[in-house]
Image 1 (cartoon, rainbow, N blue to C red):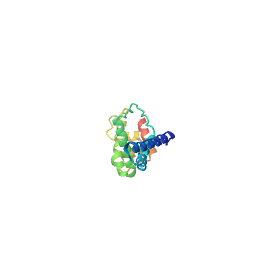
Image 2 (image 1 turned 180 degrees about the horizontal axis):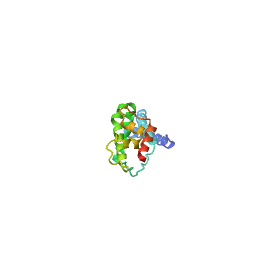
Image 3 (image 1 turned 90 degrees about the horizontal axis):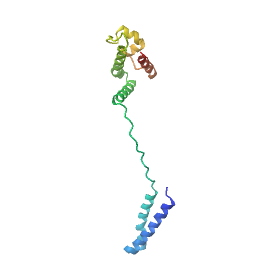
Image 4 (image 1 turned 45 degrees about the vertical axis):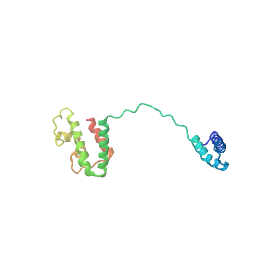
Length: 157
């Protein structure tokens, strides 16, 4: 916003420059007015620009650990791809979920010797729906709330 002080300064500059061109350089008054006008306009523009804002300096935020960030973004991308293409679920997501379930089972007492998810003990612990989701070649990616519930159930075990 152009203030009264800026306009007054620009007009004063225009008058002083016009007078200087007439007296010091010897240009005609009409030419002096025309030459001084753009210079006064530039001064008016400079005076009407907002004052610079002081930056707020602070410590940069702590980045998340590289492994956690990479795993989360990779899983998010794979789940997004699996929604559009169920084949990607079977090739990219299902094996990783199966590995996660198997490692969770092996941490349970008495199941450390489970070799794969076809073991009857794995079927019993996981339940039919979760086991089918992890092992059936024709399985499809469930709805997000179902997948979340199944993952929470696996985490509890």
